[in-house]
Length: 286
Image (cartoon, rainbow, N blue to C red):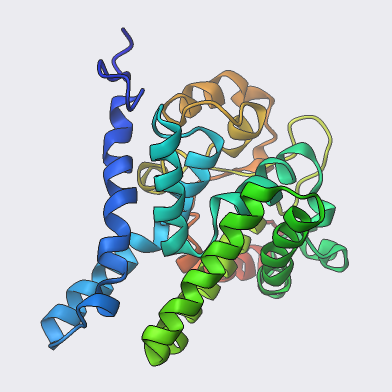
């Protein structure tokens, strides 16, 4: 038996147990202010720390789960869908429609603004912000509209159910919902679009030039090897533990311009912009 596999079979890969725990525990932590409240500076500091260190990156895990479910139980996988979706605002149905069936099948035009194609020619702060903010609404709205138009009942119910969940929270804690929850969801969407921008700026459809790769060890340790993006596109259903090996098999065919070593985290946008400005002054590219 492969060392990555669990003997029980419920979680096929042993290294995913921590991801399953993280997905289930995240809403308990994230919605803490709604059912308990946050009192005192120390408690608030711990809560903010958990948001910034753990919860903010959960959308990467949801993306992973959508491509390859973390468990073998359909019912439990649906629970994971709802658990992570409630925290990120980006439901599994949204991910499947705009990312799995859209992006990975070359149908980005339905989920991005064509008028923003210019932003992907090369990295720039203006382009990054325009792409990230300009595509946020269409990424949210279009999957909902499409699931309704195509009578994709499950996807439609999931997305509408999430909206009703937020409305219910708004009725229960209106100030907290407006001042914290909705801005949080908006930030997650914008950050997701920004990482999508990083994955594909400067790319073309020629050969192995279609994706950027982040080989920063710290980033890939935290994000389940998300940085090996060319390998991920070639084998979207491959388990995240296999991506470094898959990348190694094709590394010699990936253009050097598509290999990046700096941290890909969206929170580092100012650093990325600084690198781009410095590179531009030197006549190179970031």
